[in-house]
Image 1 (cartoon, helix red, strand yellow):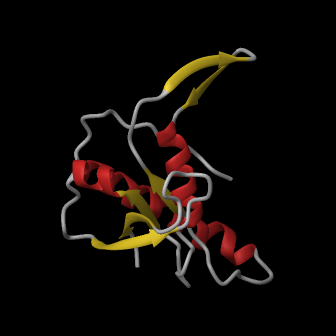
Image 2: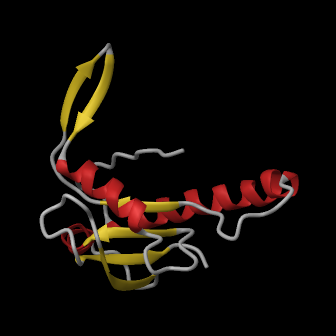
Length: 137
C-alpha cells in the first residue's frame, strides 16, 4: 500500500521532516500495538519508507478522478522504492533528491547522509545522488 502527500511549495524543511517523523511514529505505534501481536511470524523489516522530490505537477481529470502527472512524482516514487538498496533496515527512512534537500534546508538534528541509488529510466539513473534521512531508529 502506498500513499502520496502534497506539500505547499513554501513548506520549511523542519515542518516537512517533523510531519514525516510524526507519521512514522504514529504508524509504528499502531503497527506494534495492533498488528504485530496478530502475526504468526514477524517479518524482518517492518515500517514505512519515503521518497521525496519537488516540482511542477499537471492536474487532470481521468474517468471523473483527479490525477496528477509530473517528474517529481516519478522521482519521489522511485526514491521510495530505492530506500532499501544497500540498507538492511530501511524502515522509517526517506530518500530525497539533492536539489529538494538543499531547498528545504532540513535541520541537522536528523541523521542525514548522502546516498547513491539506481533509478531505472531516469536521466543519469545509475548512481543517482540523493540524501537519506533517518526518521526513527
